Amino acid sequence: MSLAEHDIKDIKLAPYGHEKIEWAYRNMPVLRKIEEELIEEKPFSGMKIAISVHVEAKTACLARALARGGAKVAITGCNPLSTQDDVAAALAETDGINVYTIHGDSEADYIKHLKMTLEFGPDIVIDDGGDLAMLLHSDMKHLVPGIIGGCEETTTGVHRLEILKEQGQLLYPVIAVNDARCKHLFDNRFGTGQSVWTGIMATTNLVVAGKTVVVAGYGMCGRGVAMRAKGLGAKVIVTEIDPVKACEALMEGYSVMTMDEAAPLGDFFVTVTGCKDVIVKRHFEMMKDGAVCCNAGHFDCEVSVRELEDIATDITELRHNVKGYKLSNGNTVCIIAEGRLVNLASGDGHPVEIMDMSFALQAQSARYVAANRGKLPVDVIMTPDEIDNRVAEILLDTKGISIDVLTPEQEKYISSWDF
Ligand SMILES: NC(=O)c1ccc[n+]([C@@H]2O[C@H](COP(=O)([O-])OP(=O)(O)OC[C@H]3O[C@@H](n4cnc5c(N)ncnc54)[C@H](O)[C@@H]3O)[C@@H](O)[C@H]2O)c1
Figure 1 (tube, helix red, strand yellow):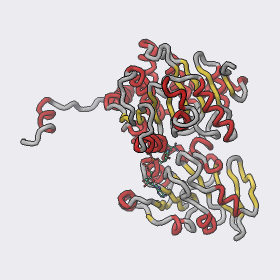
Figure 2 (spheres, rainbow, N blue to C red):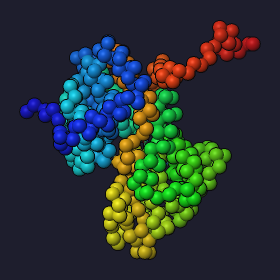
Figure 3 (tube, rainbow, N blue to C red):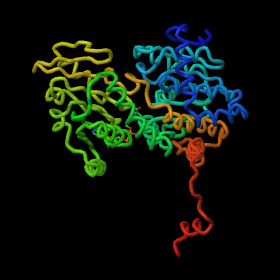
């Protein structure tokens, strides 16, 4: 049986999707510049690329750029709640792109769609969180001989690949796009920082100023979430497990304490650790009435919604994407978007200009994988510096900004020890 070209909600939604995609595209000058080169050079001719990234407008621009560079593309989501069905429909109308995703997919349908994306027979896989890679290392190992390499978008995905590598089980080379400077310094910090609060504020319509915000995890994303909460006028508490990060948060002016201490104090809780069970039963039981919890880490296991369901005496949809869990102590704890990535499951994700940088890196990293077929080590590979620098240079160029260049004497000075 041949693979269907699309499994989407409704092709009639396409006009709205095209509108969203064109808005993103006009605000993605770096990706547009890379796309011009892809169109001219067609580096992906004869290749298939499988993508599992949140299916929304910016991702659509990446998929389109790769298809315009000669690839046949199959795309699915990386989270059942972040797929935008109108964008999926618009992509299904785009030449060279197969689409397999529907907003709200059940766990079984989510996996079915990942598998369809792989059955397409890719040469290159682009993951956000590592779900395609995990299938290629388990149920779908038979497809690995066709894979030249992959690219990984986020911290959690890179972490999973590093573990595979340490255990000697990694089967193909992967570029850790997340670890490029132009990715984590901007996307994880400023992107998550802004879009988490856009998502929370639009979903709840509550004020942040004067409230107490608890941010769990002070990594690249947590810094952004805490910084923007402070800017909105909140009192910010940080919880951490890393003593150095905890000191950094303290020096930045935040209160630092354990989640057990923070639980009774917070009005908003945002987890962004990449870990699991950060907020559990005993924390919910200590929370104020109306406390709002959400997660910005990749998987939905940071806020234990399962434990909350177990102890709730009543569960009500209080507002679109906000569920209230009434507890036996009379208090209600609110959860946004079922504890899934709040900025994507209850918002449009990162601002367009941020994803312009991240997806320009993805497009160039995919081109690098294609150009180096058979030459890359089976490893988790840093994004080459020239790719990182190129993205920053194009961005500065689009803004008409020049920077200083080292003189030969300066170069000599900073590369010597005996001055
Ligand atoms: N929402 C988004 O759009 C978005 C964007 C990028 C990354 N992410 C995801 O967010 C998560 C964090 O990414 P990052 O780049 O900030 O990672 P990071 O490794 O820089 O930071 C994670 C921090 O959490 C801390 N931590 C770990 N377990 C903890 C626990 N139990 N309690 C408190 N702190 C704990 C770590 O010490 C670390 O400082 C990952 O899952 C990543 O994939 C989400």
